[in-house]
Amino acid sequence: MLTVRVMTFNIQGHAASGRPDHIPKIAEVIAAAEPDVVGLQEVHKNTRASPSDQAEQLAHLTGMNLAFGRSTKMDRGDYGNAVLTKHEIARTHVNPLPGSGEPRSVLQTDITVRGQSFTFFATHLAAWGRLLRVARVRQVNELGDIIARGSLPHILCGDFNVPPAADEMTMLLSRGHLRLCGEPGEATFPMTRQRLDYIMCGPQWEIAATEVIRRGPSDHWPFVAELRLHD
Image (cartoon, rainbow, N blue to C red; front, side):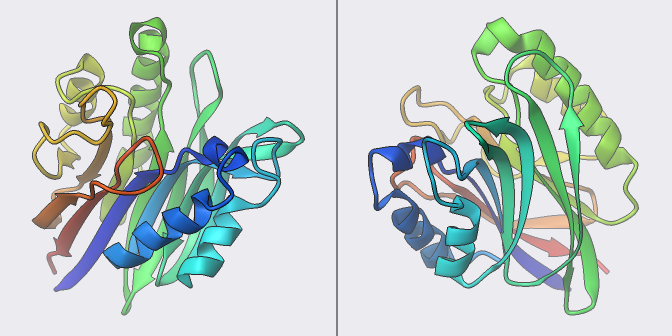
């Protein structure tokens, strides 16, 4: 039985403009958790807020393999999601998501661990609460379609910018090919004491353990799940 330790982490990449040690501290949190695969949000690549390639820097500091998925161009650089993993990345693809406001996407990666493969999705949905609810609904519907088309066991992670009881979450989970990992009441966004960051898995996975890691320099706390893939 394959066991993988998964993390989702909104790293608040723009904070690196005022804190030179921001990315090294993010790397310390990731390394201490010892995940097999990490989905990252708010990653800057050569932007005004961060002239460095944050994904490459984190890959170097953690010794993990990297896939970066641009959601939008920003200040002559790129901004989006990233995946770090200890294992082989067999394939990557960036799927744009619909909706108004800041462009959003989902980074799709096929990862192979000891001969077994699964698809890992990392995303960041539209923010600003009710203001962009219509955009998030469109994004959730597209996200559900993308995941349903896959043939491999799947895991979805990301910052959804809504609490567990929101209609957007209900719509996504009602499709039947995803279930939440962990206790929905556990906060991952300390400022509002809400859960905004999630890991979800398909029916092939058993949820062995979950944990909110209450440390790090970001305004979000990382969330970790240990999952076991049934033969």
